[in-house]
Amino acid sequence: MPDLAASLAAHTLERAAAVILADALALAAALHLPGGRDRHRRQLEHAIDLANRVLAAAEEEGGEAGTDTGMYAGARSTLVKAHAARARDARHGAGQLSLGAQRAPTCEACDEGWRRVEAIVAVAEASAFMAARMAAELDNNSAWKAARAAEAAARDARRIVDERNRAYTFHADPGFSFGEGWYLAAAAVLAGVAIQIEPDEPQTSQAERFLRDAGLSSRLQPYRSRPRANKHLPEIVARAFRTDPLSAQRKLRAAFLGDAPIPREVIDWADRRFAGVSAGRKILIWVRYSTHHPTRNTTYPELVELARRTLAANFVPVLVGDAVRDGEVPAGAVDMTLFWKEPIFQGADMRRAQLQFFEHLKGAHGLVGQLGVTTAGMDGPALMDLPTMYLTDAPNLRLGTWVGTVPGYREVVRGEGYLERVSDGLRRWADDGETPKT
Image 1 (cartoon, rainbow, N blue to C red):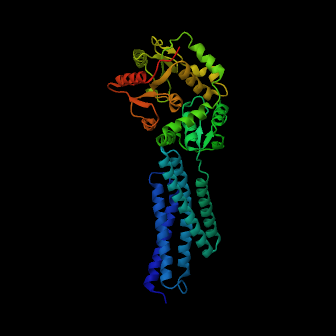
Image 2: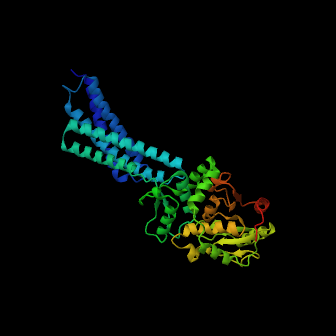
C-alpha cells in the first residue's frame, strides 16, 4: 500500500509543477521584455524538475500500480508541455546566438559561439525526445500535438547548425572597400577559406574573374545569407605569414599576378603618365577621403608634410588614391590620384590590372615603398612585397597583426614625433635601395 505522506507530497509537487508551467507559458507574450525570457526559462526548468520528482517518487515506491494514476498523468502532461516549450525556447536561443557568433570579430570567437549554439540545439533535441516519450505514455491528442511541436522546434534548431554559412563575402559594390578584396583573396590562397561573391553588383563579374584567375574557383560557393565576418581575414592572413613569410608572399604574387607578362596596355598607360617625371626612386603617398570612418581621412597639411619629407629623403612622391582636397598638389609631387577610375583599370580584369600597374612601377619607375593613412587599397601591394608605412590615430587591432609578420609592413601611430618616425622609415628605404637605371 503506498505511503500516505509520500502520496500527499507527490500530489503537492504535481500541482506545483502544473502551476509553475502555467505561469511560464503565460509569459509567452512578454518574452521580449527585459528579463522575460530568463524568467520563462527558469520556470520551465523548475516545472520539469518538480514533475520529474513526481515520477521518480513512483519509481521509488515500486511503480504506479494502485496509486493515483491521474496524478502521474498530470506530471507527464506537464512534462510534455514544458519540454515542448523548452525546445521552442532553445530554437530561439540558437537562432539569436548564431547571429552573434557569425559576427564575432575573431575566428576563435566565431567557433566558440557556434559550439554554444550546438549545445543549445542539443537541449532542443533532448527536450523533443522527452516530449515524445511522455506523449507515447499518455497517448492522447494534446500530448502528441505538443510532442510534434517539440520535434519541429528541434529540427529547426538543428537546421541552423547544418546551414551555417562558412564563406566570407567578396563585396562587388563599388561603394564598399575595394581593398578588402585583397584580404579575402589572400586568405583563400593561403588558408583555403570559402568565398561567396556578392551577386548582381556592378563589379560582380570582375570579382569572379579575379578569383578564378587567381586559381580560386574551387573556393567559390553560391551566395547565401549570414556569411562569416570579414573581420577575421587579416588574422587568417597573418597566421600564414608567421609560418613562412617568404612562401606566403610567393604564393600571393603567383596567384594575384599570374605568370603572363604585364599587358602592354598597362605598361604603355603608366609610361605615358610618367613621361617627363624624374627617374629617381619613388614613394606612393595614399590619399583617402571617405564617409566611412572620416577621422581616418587625409588632412591637407599632413599630406604636404609627407610629400616634403619624401622629397627630403631623395624620393619622388607619387600621390595615389582619392583626389587631393583643400589645396593644390604639393610641390614636387606627381599626381596619380584617381588612376583607378581610368577605363584600363575598370575593365573585366580590373583587380589584376591595378596590381600589375604597381608591379610595373617597381620594375620600370623606381617604386620602392608606400605610405599614407590606413586604407585597404594599400594592402594588395603590401602583401606582395611593397614596403609599407600606414598612419593611424591608434593601434589598429586588425592590421596590427601584420606588423612584424608581413615583411616590410609598419604601423605609425599619430602622436608626438610620429613624422620623425616617418622620416626614419624613409631613410631606411633610401639606404636599402639602389638608384634605378634610366
